[in-house]
Image 1: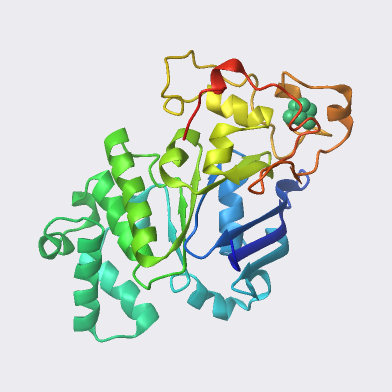
Image 2: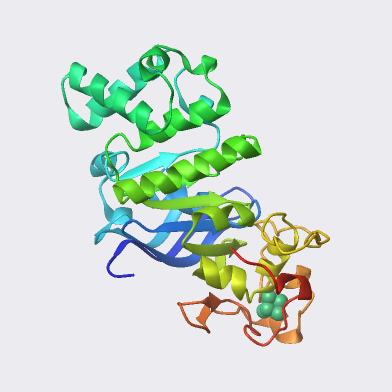
Length: 335
Ligand code: SF4
């Protein structure tokens, strides 16, 4: 990767509450290159969505943010709020989990797209309408003229998500952040939406950050994967490395609990024991230690740093990275 488009350094997010601070994200550092597709995976509460909202500064004003979020050299955490409006939509597009709740029920699909385009581009209404129809066509909406006149409640979940993607790319952003965009969809539509994101990324050169809890989904989408746990990145690497040589016990646990990543033979799915910790009570040392089958005494005391230990910038936050033998059934996993 040459110059990163997005460079996140030591990002931390804390929410003050009456019963004490909640540390949702801890010193997260990662980069996304121009046109690169990066997947962020982890269970609920791993800090993925909070990190995405922190990047775009869409969190409640009470949230305390620290670190650096540089978009092409500009630190978004230091940008005045008046300038953020130009970043969101124009430079960073967002796609959320439930598209219908993100669309206004009182405006037609076409009018909402036209408003979004005019708000950022200031073009005449006719030019904005032409652009809206082009966008609907490019995201695979059949008969865009007809569907532009419809209201969101008439759309299926898949079509509503396509409209949201059209809205998100309406100003040709350099980065698209998609937060669990397929969670509410069935598997066939899920595959179509993921393929659409890949296609848009390749055709337009848009970098895409896809947040999901489904590691198998990323085999279809990502070039690079970040695995998060309890608000921190615990493993990162290219998709080939993550599937071919995963090294963190949490990544192994995720792989053992999903279908689709091992196409070589049938295998028994195994859930990770226990539950992710509350952000109010992150365990000392390695946050994964209460659930880790390989835990040692040092794991309970010392926080493991995310260290590069292989080629392709493969890094793992485990005291024993590269020393543990991964489970037999994961040896045949391929992306
Ligand atoms: Fe498991 Fe210890 Fe590695 Fe944490 S540091 S993942 S507890 S072996």
